[in-house]
Length: 106
Image: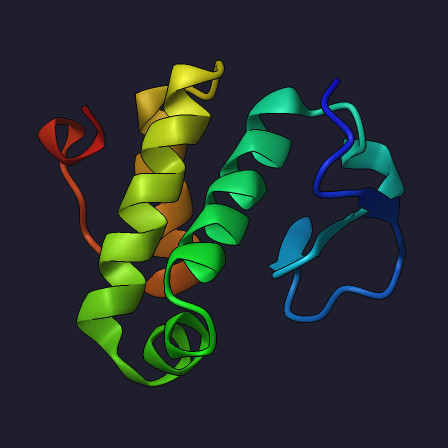
């Protein structure tokens, strides 16, 4: 497994999250540390942050359309690495209240 950004196990994630990316690193619950699709999802968020330093963080936090785009991109990567499309659709609804269709994830 690629070690950049570093993946750090933790039990201190808020709001029921399984993992989070923080620009230079990823934190993940210990029970999900080997979930390659999830790690790739978070790596996509790291790439997004690197493409738009600082701006990505502000847009993700305050612009629903950007957050939706960002999550769809990350879920596409996750599906490409083994997550089912139905699980990705459910995740988008459960975590973000966003309705997506299978075509959004291709």
